Image (cartoon, rainbow, N blue to C red; front, side, top):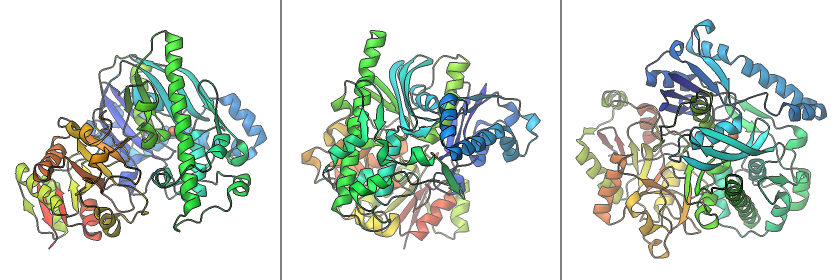
Amino acid sequence: MIVLGINAYHGDASAAILVDGELVAAVEEERFTRVKHTAGFPAHAVRYCLQAAGVTIQEVDHIAIPRNPRARLVQKLLYAVKLPRFALERVRVLGRFGRIKEALAQALEVDPKAIKATFHRVEHHLAHLASSFFVSPFERAGVLSLDGLGDFASGMWGIGEGNRITVWGSVPFPHSVGMYYTAVTQFLGFWKYGDEYKVMGLSAYGEPEFLEEFRQMLQVKDGMGYEMDLRYFRHHTDGPTMTWEAGEPQLGQLFSDEFVRRFGDPHPPRTPVGRREENLAASLQARLEEVVLHQINALYRLVAERTKQPTNALAYAGGVAFNCVANGKIFDATPFEHLYIQPAAGDAGLAIGAAFYVWHQVLGYPRKFVMEHAYWGPEFSDADIRRALERHGLAYRQLDRETLVRETAQRIAQGKVVGWFQGRMEWGPRALGNRSIVVDPRRPEMKDILNKRVKHREPFRPFAPSVLEEYTGEYYQHSYPSPFMLLAYKVRPEKRDEIPAPTHVDGTGRLQTVNKETNPLYWQLIDEFRQLTGVPIVLNTSFNENEPIVCTPDEAIDCFLRTHMDVLAIGSFLVERA
Ligand SMILES: [Fe+2]
């Protein structure tokens, strides 16, 4: 039985495919179009998923679409009366979704009649909840989704038990914890879709000087739920529209004139930030953490009250679940002891969520799959890689695995910038050791070297560590695994001087814990580095330069040549710059 999940006409378009209830492939469309967060129809991603599963579209039994234009129809209609522009947008959305079968047929160059699959619509937040709970290791868990907006809501919660999710509540438009964060992100001069994580990095430099104002801006109730002070925002008057130019999604301005009256002029893009911006970011982040942790605590109590049986497991999803600084505080600030966040926690993950929702909750099959790693994308053989190296006229050595790992670890320890391209590409926005740039974490200068030569990032943004899972507690104040780089922990004070490069100004690291079973080659590389240096950690940043993470060997080689990396370890080949 084949289930295909398609997240279309939304930011982070993506596709995922299940064969008999097991995930076989999942990938974001941006990796093929080379435009970050590509919206529209994910034609390439669908083609890849079918090919990875070895099936044609004619053999697909069910197609799951994570959007239900009929969800909250009454609220939408009431809103449309107040704002005619919004009504027009709804008509456009309904039109696009009505033609999804045709779009699919066109992308695959088949007759629409050849597609025999049953189409299912899964509400946006239900797909978020499913994307986490149904692939988590938990038999029972509190489930929570928080994001900007999807199907006219910004949050949803309930309980997951076996192959069922029961929804207990949601927060309807216009109140949104994600929009709150994005509005201030725009005000601070970051207008690109997905720029929120830059502001999260910036927040560590400031003091929450404006916390009282931000508490007014985003309020919580006794139980679950939150409300915005709408005077500071304008999405409710302008309509929550998103456009995409050449595939790249863009949101209109979300902060209001009132916001400007209170905090002054917005910060101009691409100019250095000052104390006001740092303190605004710190206040924004501090309030986000209060609200998120309040929701999570309230959910814990709700599960206990409603079911008389508490759970210490939380399955969490939605764009807000990318806030690893808030996530890292869950264990200290709430009773939850187990946490699962899927690597594509944002809207790309909807493709997986919708597919598993159909498999379990619509078709009724029992649980059996757990997503233990993020390697669900394209891979390339050594023959493919060799041809790419030869096309570029690069000198290379082909090495056995032991030698490749040993020599690469030596180069890292020598302070070289190493491109590491191995196996299947990661699902989700973080490079997790298959499409990574890896450097020595002991050298404080590595951050500047990476920024100057490869990444060209704002200087306030941190770099992340990959740590052997076994050593997590020795270096960080928590040891709960963080396989998808979605938790920030404090570095133990006595270890800070040992790993300055991937330690942020506030003494935290947004770490990836590397497991010997789920990525043996990357584990071996870091372990080799540990044997050379005594440090079981490398600095890991995504293999790209202001573009989506590289997917193919050609893209990796182009990036290696364009930027000034020293070494490229690609498949079983080692390339060194003279
Ligand atoms: Fe979402």
